[in-house]
Image (cartoon, rainbow, N blue to C red; front, side, top):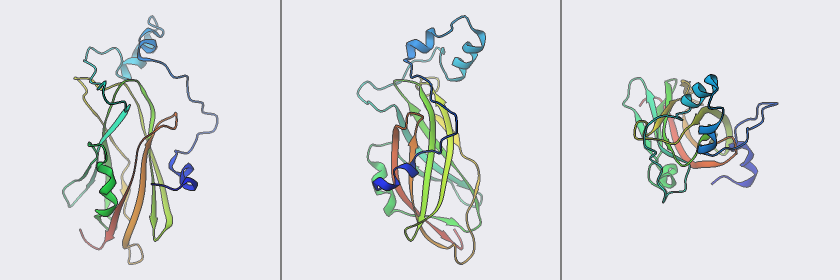
Length: 200
C-alpha cells in the first residue's frame, strides 16, 4: 500500500471554509425536521423515507462496498475490475490493462452502502510512471443512503478523460486509488497498473 508520506495525497483536496456536518444515525435523519417540506425532499434525494427493505449485512461491518470499476472507451468492449470480493484488489497491480494512446475513456464505479448514510464519498487516484507522480485525479461521488431492495447498488460515471499520446507517453503506469468519505474514512484503497499503447 501507499507509504506514510503519500497518505495525505490519497485524500481529496479540501474546499476552503467547508466543514463536515455532524454525523447522525438513520433514526435521527428520519426524525429531522419532519414537517419541513424542503428537508423532506432532501432526505428523499438521499434515499431516506423510501419503502425499500434495507440490505445491510449485519455480519459485514463495512459501510461502503465497492463492487467494480469499469472503463468504457469507444472502439473496445468495457473493461471491468471486479472488486466485490474482499481481497480481490490485491492482485490488480500484476494485471495491467491496455489503453490506446489519445483515446477518450470514462470510468464508472458500482457500489453499495450499508448501516448508515455515506457522506461525501470521493474517488482519488495517484498515477505514477517510473516512480514519478504524473497526475492526481479526484471525483466527487456523493452522499448515499443504505442500499435497499429497490436500489441494491449505486453507480457513478466519472468525467471523460483523454489518454496521453505520443511516443514519450507510451509505456507502463502504476496507480493507487482510494474511495474516501468526508470523515476521511477509506473504504477501499488499491494499487493497479495500465499500459498506454499505440493500439488496443
